[in-house]
Length: 283
View (spheres, rainbow, N blue to C red):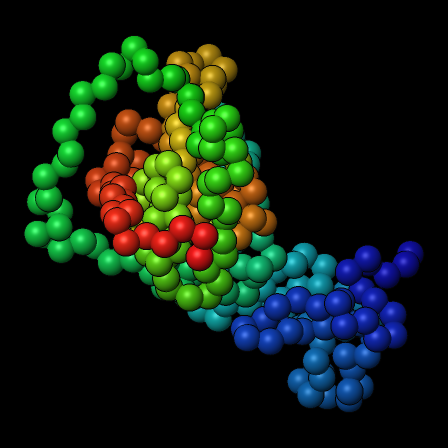
């Protein structure tokens, strides 16, 4: 029986797994001291999985074989058990989860702090009077995507990645402002539960499989629609652009239940009003 595919011969720098703020390796080059495993750069289970050595009972950490990662005593941003729970009942939860490698080994509290970055608006801001619009409801389509509207093709700001920087407010505001110079989108604040980090597809609503703290996050609403579910009414959703890169969710976007204020996304929604008097075109 050969070695698992996670194990690499000789030196291969890409044969690695993130751990804390560095990497551990699953190639033969990671061994620097055959008698002192703690002195090498190998993942904690490298000798067990790749060399066939007997495992140590107190040897935790990232797994070459399973892609699991060490988050000390804290919860990880992504956890296999929670992903399986959601994916085993997609009709119940309405969405599917995925294990994103760029979140491996990151603590949930770090994700909530560094992958979000908005503050709850002050009371005075929350009391602003909304602009009263009375559109002809019969003229509003059941689904809309700003990216596919013929007059706006290629004009919707692309999905960005804020990285490990708590600045979602800046990314959503800049994106909405750029869009507003061309047409209109809106920025909304929402409450991020840990399970949103694992979202892959479908219509998101908080699953309840993750517990603990939440964080405020700013996102950009670019459309809406409704999807049918077997044996039930169509589920309405908002189409939202996130700031976690295109590898997350549906090419950087996600759908979230509409009309129920899911995760507070309908509590505080803003659009930008641009004054063009001093705007210099072509700069």
